[in-house]
Image (tube, rainbow, N blue to C red):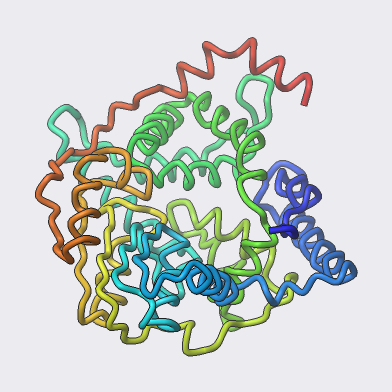
Length: 375
């Protein structure tokens, strides 16, 4: 719309200060800038309490009625699945069928270290079953070792463990990029941190500008913020493999600094919905684990079904790895109400990366020098 809750200053703060993006000094600065941004919006007469999921649904309802549609189908993904779920709670008479891809039930805008550890160990099992592998190396241990023993520099360039952790988690969302992450950590465990440095470099050029951060705070906090949860302590568990870097970056910085206007309590928890719903999940989705939809949401959907696509990750995997099969399943569900996943073929996890970041970092070293000179 005409007013977007984006801030260049917050983007700049998200590049961090000091040698660790997730260090206390850096999180403090990000939090300070988030608080400054919220106050500047208020001074401009912008009420951030109207940037919630409930307001999104109200806007959609205005459009539906204006166009003259009596009932609509909903297709949603990731964050959008929460919008679709609440849409069905608030306006069940308006929703004919709903397909939710990479499902995010109430309470799961926060990633937790324990769940991330569990998912990494699932990858361990896949890796050890891969007949092309030799030895007994564990991916999770390689990650833990590389992070614990990280040197201060790769060649002449400082390594920033927080940026590396953040990009690690983001790249684990999808199976092809996950293979690149694991390959880089196995190399780092052997002393070669070139791949991890390239991930760090990519953070500055991609992550801070990925979204309108004020919009994320407004929608995420109003739906899932828990004042009884110690975000900084819980999300940086030193006993976990890698903690929860993105949640620590977002929630650890924003908690207590962004003004929260909660959506109604009954929308912050799972409740019964009669809307015919298809839940589609990847079995190795780090962002929206399939088990959450299975154990927390499916039982509340008497007209619901779930399809778990084996060894697929987040949204891009589901839509792009086998697009014809996905289109077939969506079409049959929306037109006939039938769940038909028969065209999907099992595609096992391939741990050989499409690109080796270690090789790319060394091959692009002159370019990396130039980038660092002009940053």
